[in-house]
Length: 163
Image (cartoon, rainbow, N blue to C red):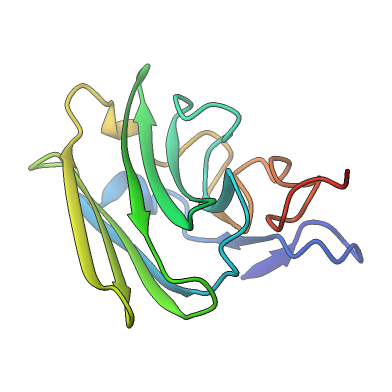
């Protein structure tokens, strides 16, 4: 169920479709994947189902910032929560997971890095409307992109736009 959203352009963004209503029906879910990067990209959505032009838009995003670091974001109902500054080793595969528990209300970021070890951070979701976690763009997750499919179009999540 992968779909290249950019045709023949070698920009590397995809949509992963999932069953409609899945994120709405689950009380607890985890999205996990292996990731490797040179660590130079900044403010690039690795995975998301929201319009990442604002972290306050409804949905989820896991993004890379220079450092190299990861940032996890969840928003809905005009509120947002973030876990920032999760370091990872450039040019090495790392396992990344984001868990949302709608009942107990934490968002948890987990990263396994063979060089840095295991990192887990949680934050309370507070007033975030968790009924909006599925975002507004349909039952899919953008890979190497946000939910709209236009956030990283300039530079494919690499080193930024040409100068």
